[in-house]
Length: 156
Image (cartoon, rainbow, N blue to C red; front, side, top):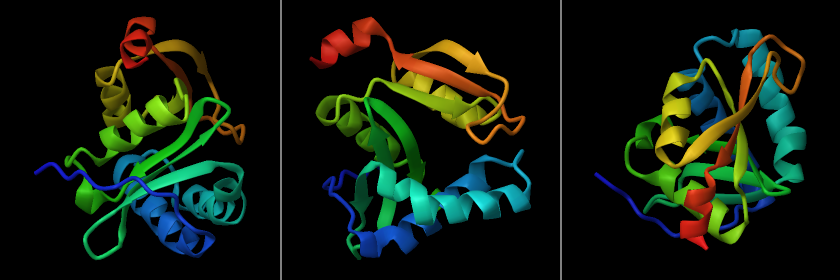
């Protein structure tokens, strides 16, 4: 079942719910991360990272956040969908909005997150580089992706 909701800008009062969605999504898709690292990242997400990004989100009919994205300097820095709402087109809707309205055409993805890698390839992204470590210097390789030029020409 596809869900198309209005893209909105979350408020600071939404940060606890955004963080809940982030953690649920990470726990569902990042089985390679230890619990202690997720706990550390959760604090950074809620207290630092969300403030540093242009945030967009989708909400369900009960006004609960079903997914969100964060963009900075033309790069999708975060894209997370509540596991209960996966497969409904929310991630694609958020990504398309970020590309079309926030000029985002690059992102990094954990190489070990096969589902996300496949999703981004399907959305027209290609690998332009790789790092052995994540942004915190931990041994979780990142793939650096950019929207294929043919894709960005079609969007414009």
